Each structure stands twice: as structure tokens, then as C-alpha cells.
Length: 149
Image 1 (cartoon, rainbow, N blue to C red):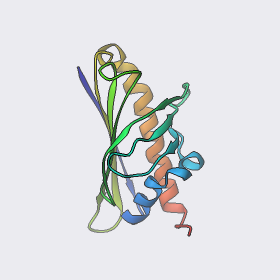
Image 2: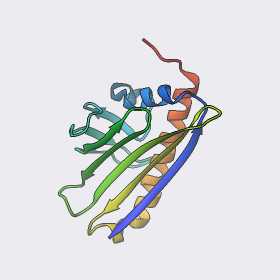
Image 3: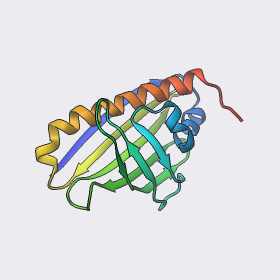
Image 4: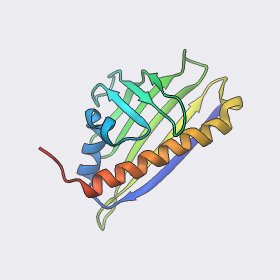
């Protein structure tokens, strides 16, 4: 079974700034209300340690592997809950540079596995809310905080 959740938000900041915030994993604990911590590097094949905490829910650690890391364009990883085949997720972040300036930030997840049908509503509610919260936080972080060196 498959299921897909997609969100997007417009961010009035240069694509380079949005990308920089997204891949600065050590800063996520400060601004990201959904992916509370990310350990690792944005390199294809890298295994991350991600602490996900849905709004109002209990958090959990996941160990996704990065499938794509194209600067200023796309970051994508895939992980499994407990073991492959039960509930697998391919999470993506896509940055669409606008000709007039700014970015449309796309974020979503493709879910696969035997647990998808019974968890579909829960995924829509909790993951959907988490993605929206992350989008809004990334927008604030990118628009209101200049790059720090």
C-alpha cells in the first residue's frame, strides 16, 4: 500500500539561505518543531539519526539514508519504522526558486508498507501537522534571521 502527503509554502528569502538552514542539521533543535534533531551530513548515502516529534505526540528516532542532496534544489531520504516493509517513508524537501525572487518550499512524504492502510488517518493528521509546522518554522528562520558566520 502507498500513501502520499504533500505540503508547500512560499518563503521570501534567497534559495541559498533556505537551503543553508535546511542542511544545517545542528541548528534544527533550535528552530524545528517537528524534526527536533538531525545528526549526520547532507550527502548521498549518509545515514542520519533523526528525532521526529509530531505536534502533541511522542517522539521517536529514525535512521534514514540520504537518497538525494542537490544543493539549493532537493534533499531526500528514506527510512523505515522498526523494519523495512512495515512502514517505510521517503521524505523529500524541494526548493523551487521563483523568477521574481523567493522560494516555493515543497515538503512531503511517500509512505509504503503493510501498516499504511490502518495508519493512513493518523499519518495525515500527525505527519501532515508536523510538515506544516516545519514549513512555517523554516519560513520564519529563513526570512527573519540573516546567515550567521
